[in-house]
Length: 198
Image (tube, rainbow, N blue to C red; front, side, top):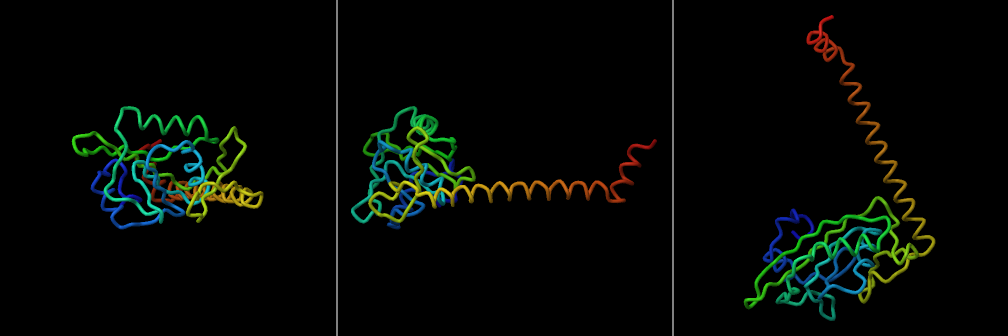
């Protein structure tokens, strides 16, 4: 649900139901009690690897499972813009994940969970720290986004990007060919002649 439901339709019940399953952080999931000092690192690592979801306002326990009940963070205007600014100020090339601010009430207090859904990027590698570091997501349970990519891993990211660009070009070429084939069939040519007699 967190991964597949349209992000604008998510509500706090969806997040609670998901968290009650006790799914650990991993390659594609990260819990943050509050905005971390280096959110860009996690976003960049997800984009460079397999994509993923970050839930800000959901605390993880020692086993990296979500703690219930969800505390959230204090809701304030500008949370969405805060995420966008972190990305634009720190990640190159920039990327644009799906972001939803899920508001809820907790004992009369206005709270929120920030859901950031990052797709696997076809523009890897994304860099941070003034274009110096490339981070990837690993299965390290303590700091899974703290691995700076090696030369081999950066080469893998470039190859992944190249394959993505080749696939896009193939899809485009096939679409153009189909349109030409359809347009040049006798049935279509006859229809065009009937509509536009000379």
